[in-house]
Image 1: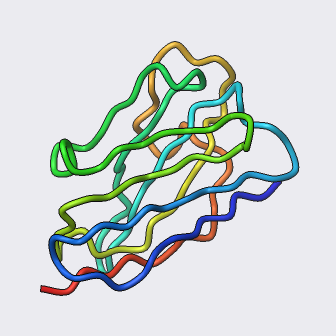
Image 2: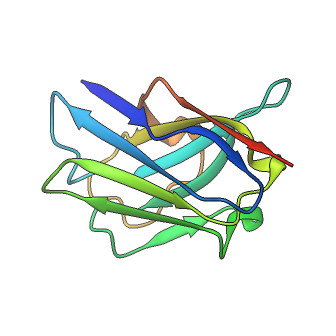
Length: 126
């Protein structure tokens, strides 16, 4: 099982990036998916998550209104559209798959996820 994150890069403040996370080895259409990030010297933090059906989403407060998580179960892929980027968004972004099937809420904590991608770097310059 592999989660391949891509789409990171260097962007100026106010710019946009779209991250993708393609899963292989099994389907995750029955699992919630999430994005986390870790900046140098800081702990990993939750960014956004989407339920297995795509009907529910949740975001950390600092990205609400700027980031949008979505999924395409036919492509086994989850996306994170990031707009109005700020220097404080600079981090290594990871996608992850929920350890439970058909969870009835959107998981926000790292231990609730079992599969993790390798990360894609997002750098926002001021």
